[in-house]
Image 1 (cartoon, rainbow, N blue to C red):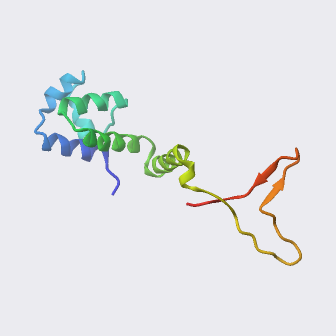
Image 2: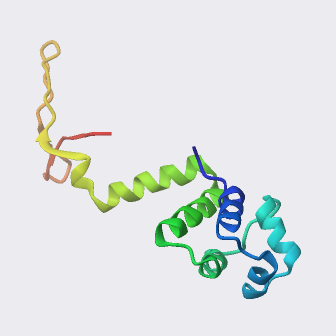
Image 3: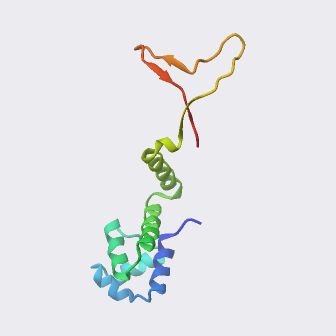
Length: 132
């Protein structure tokens, strides 16, 4: 299930027994603005504001991770967020997804595709398998 920012924030407020007015003052916000965040009618203007709320509620690092991830998902939507997250993981560790072994090719008719070829500049290009 994809976490909804307002739901996660509301759950932490109830779980930690947080006074909303005090948290709004700590974050330099109106109480009505904080209630709009809690009810899902608005979202915070920045991740630093989310960090302030987390600091006030004394969230653990894991709890803050969930709250900030829910906030980031609310900004761009789940499809784009998870696509970007997957690309970021790929860029962090491409060896996990790319095999060092050449792709196996089969002969089709009289032609076969070699595992390596030269580009126009004469450089050798190897074909690698991408695991998804």
